Amino acid sequence: MKALSDAERYGLEEDGDTPYFLDMHQTAVELAAGSMAAADAVMSGKAKRALHLSGGLHHAFPDRASGFCVYNDAAAAIGHVREKYSARVLYIDTDVHHGDGVQWFFYTEPDVFTLSIHETGKFLFPGSGFPHERGDSHGYGACLNVSMEPYTEDDSWLDCFGRALESAARAFRPDLIISQHGCDAHAFDPLAHIHCSMRIYREMPKMIHSLADRYTDGRWVALGGGGYDHWRVVPRAWSLLWLEMNNHPLLASIDAQEDGGLLPEGWSDVPAPNKPDYELPTTWLDDVKNWTPMPRRTEITEKNIKNLEIALQHIG
Image (cartoon, rainbow, N blue to C red; front, side, top):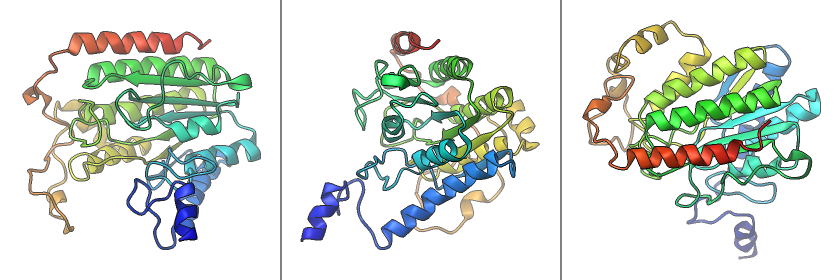
């Protein structure tokens, strides 16, 4: 019973968001080591870019697990880069949930800039990530939270993300970009209230790639993250990320077609347990022409812009 009590004290609950499991420590350590190795490969010059989809467990804190995350691999990778290379790191979090763990790890650190775009914490876990969270002490100004209203759609999401991204990079001048690619801001995701399509998962990696080429000599480490529509969203989003990081020639075809063109034939025939009974996508992007537009679109867009302008006030 004492072991169970200790587990709960450290954020681990049998029936909670972060349950304990056999060999948990070793598994979590290996996952964190993967993100550290990816960052080391890029900073040492062995690779220009590195992708570690098992990473991105951004909710874990130094003293406790949280939100499906045991150890914070992103923070470990950033800390490793700071210690070994003294590099300035721009951390970009695109998960629909605020990247709270990484933010609080480096909240007073001037050489780590954390940028998170997410659904407002007024309605979604972890209940943080508001525009007034800007860093503290020597780290004031090295934290930017882009808080989005429920039912935000593609244009507003990408506009706010792009403006925040450029402002942060211009002010901070990073040596390395580490990005977290949760793909749960999609309209199909069951845990959030954002109404975006696959378009944002094509455009955001492209924007980050461009930023890396202009500010960090291309140095970019990408991690995975959350995503709870395991069939319609995650496979396409992370495939688009991989294609972008590899400058794959297929991207030209995807970008030339409104729906992105057809997915590889038979991709959905892969044997798997718990396969859904709903229709699976056949194209890289979504046919948003058939989606019902949000009735409060103008109001939502204006609120997002207002929040962004407040958040950007402290960025030089």
